[in-house]
Length: 336
Image (tube, rainbow, N blue to C red; front, side):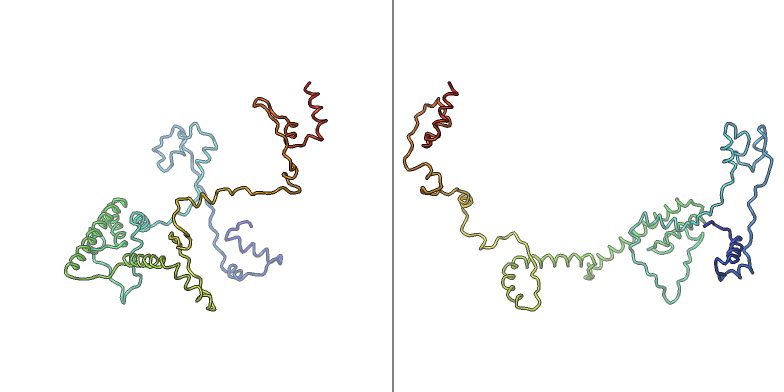
């Protein structure tokens, strides 16, 4: 949809109503009774361009880019772009307090974890007497300054003591660190003095968390050794109940007694398990190799170590030469 100006919206709606395209909106009669103001068009004051030989000091209100001498050697497009009036843009709303607060939490991130009460008391506390130009040190607001006190002191140094924002922030944070360190050392010294006189304090949250963790680890270590015996005795009771409660599994490196039969044999039992058994004594029967060879042993063929046995010699050694004589004759003829 084409973007319309505010002064053109009632006229556009009137045309749509005449064409019966829309129904009258709620604001239509109010806009006709009080039409939006028409803004004047932006106009550029026409003025004569200075000559090339004109002195720049005679036109102090013109930027250097508008002078003819400064535009020498540039193209027409470049000159038109330089003469173009910039579009008006809304400047961002930035407060010095937000800039200082953002930088403070970057430098001191753990200050964001300190609890701060947002509930007011019966009456709002009055503003501190140290304010304005009279506030020269952060300690005037107390020995334990807060984050907001440090930010306010930075702005006071910047506005009333002629310091830049960076120098004011450096001075305020330096005093903040000194006061916090002084308060911490005073707290530690007071605690040691109280303990020396016999005072006792509650454990801090970190100590309580460590004690609970140690207690849980010790309880797990005591129950892991008796898991095997307890699980065996509790199994019948668990099966007899209506709702079976799962038994927690405890893994341990201890091997139970029944899993280790015998004693330590130094690997002899493991080697004996891999020893091959003796060959079985199989008698001669029908369909086996012993029955094929026959009962009578075949005459041994004497051969020298240098002579190699051929196929017919192997058959003769097993007594199978009756039907292979023709094959032997063919082999002898092939050798001759």
